[in-house]
Image (cartoon, rainbow, N blue to C red; front, side, top):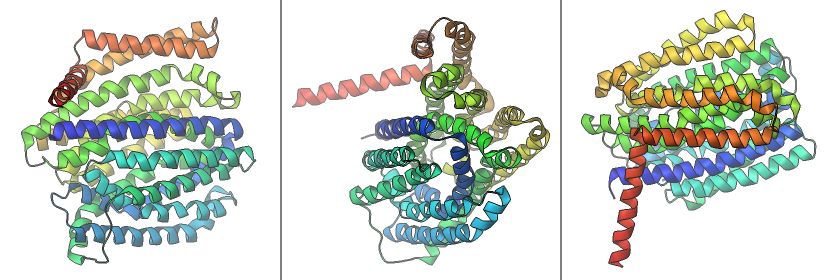
Length: 489
């Protein structure tokens, strides 16, 4: 099977996994929103800031090092596996010891036990990282889906049950721990890779030389992505932090479903052609065009339909999060562009440039936050949009240097989708208030969503967007192959 076909099938499996898992997560989140209050989500947001930092320490960039190695021996994989476990134990130990300091920082004593119990997820995940990386290298996303979906279903059931029984924030912690435990166990059950009792210091040093820069980059990213929640929880209240975190969670359910499905597959696939700059550039152009074609309308229509969505699915206590979600969606439009350009650096092994860009962006975030934090949450979110737009420029600059994919070429590839999605979403947003005045919110949500989606698809077909043609061509190729196979039988 060709690399393009194998990659496309991998994306479909991974997207199916993301769709089912995120769909389940969306359903559980909406159910929990009816059982819990914003303060419960705010407490989890405070805990997750530090759990995410500990998870980055546990990974230490070794997963990315495994994925980009042209040849990987059993000794290398085993070395990375045992290193991750050691880093996981260290990260949890630091988390456990720092729990009282975290509680003092927020003036919230309940965080001590929440951090110490929730932090167990870091050690559970340390057993999954390399097993998952080996499946990614083989583009075996079917096995990942088989492991991930039961984890989502079981953990969602546990969370809803705990929420219904009145356990509050512990329903969210229970969901997180159960998902990690079930998914990790099933990945080991169905995955074929097993570690050997061996450790190669030379191999560890080689992987860590690449990985530690990715680790530092991720630590910076984690710190500054969660800086918003940390700052809002500190300056305002757990309820406001809960509204912010809930809106961010809804946004992530959409953006991660699309971006992660493509990123998980394309990074190991493109790493295999890293020495061929012509093929690499061509592949990146296609990936960018397809990703923005899907993501731009998804994020902008989510912003346009946020009010009827909340009115339909959530209690009125969550309506204050509507403008938060809308601004987050606008900022997220730039996410796939920056992510793909940074992926070029990882594929080419330039983790030094990756780290340098992360530092530049974090300085920009600090500068914008220094101006906006005094003016409230809305100002902070507008600052996020500014950071997202400005950060794209240095991210894209190095794609021109490394694979000759200039900013001008990128603009030509993504602007048509952005303009069309903006026009459709803008029209929808303008029409929603008038429609809510005459129709119930569920009707407005369904009718507006279907009409906007159909308009985007039909206009993109009429305008002959490249992503549409890629999809149509791939489907025709698959149908032809199936017809040939049936004839041969």
